[in-house]
Length: 316
Ligand SMILES: [Zn+2]
Figure 1 (cartoon, rainbow, N blue to C red):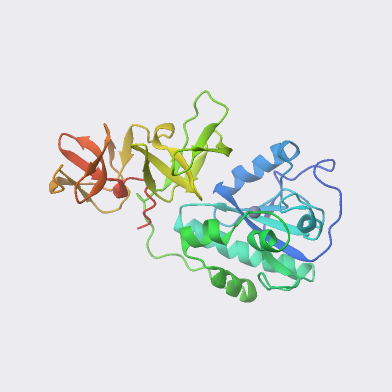
Figure 2 (cartoon, rainbow, N blue to C red; figure 1 turned 90 degrees about the vertical axis):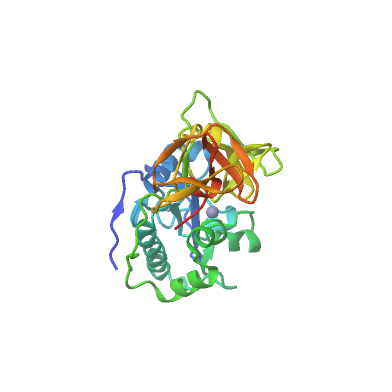
């Protein structure tokens, strides 16, 4: 199998680690945010400051970006795993089904090809050498990350650990395009550029996540909208929430559907014409409507349930 690798963001000869690795593991990660090119560029420009990079970042519809050199340590999974993994791979997130299909097939097939190249078994998370999730490294060697299955593949795309293990063992021969491509379903929330270095994130109880600030202008996949202290927040990670007010949806909602949806009145009854998928609505406040739950107030006595807003986590 041949792979095209883009070397635009490859580290230079004097960048990154010059320590050769042992050949025990191929480590699988996911980036937690969107876009392979953006993540590869981030590693290239920040590896020294953050002391973090990997050999390969992939995504954007099956594109592969090289950052570190194969067979030389990356800084992605703690010192023992780094020293024994010739290749660590980061899968970037997407919200597009067709893109994901290509990304996932490339992720699996590329990991298998690298394992074969280094004499590593195509066995996922077994007790011996093999292809490892970062979660396995955390549980068996060092660390606390749970990627890529628990954090991304399963909650967003329904790929279980069992499925990934099967695909790692056998490879993915035919990339089947999904029959339906949703055009108005979007759960990406984009943080305002703003004149700040970083934005705080919060827990469901309203307290700040002290170690998890996020950069202005970045995009995140929201798995749901929750009310915290009477305001809507997007769920962008395990108990990590950001206020809607710091995103481009701060004063509007877009309908998260390809088919029209209905609004309700304050009694919870369906009112007015259906609202087209993808259409934008200004909102004044968020109100708890009896029998319906929290809704955006989008007109006089017209309320849109949170689940119909982009960023609600609805996937069609
Ligand atoms: Zn990881």
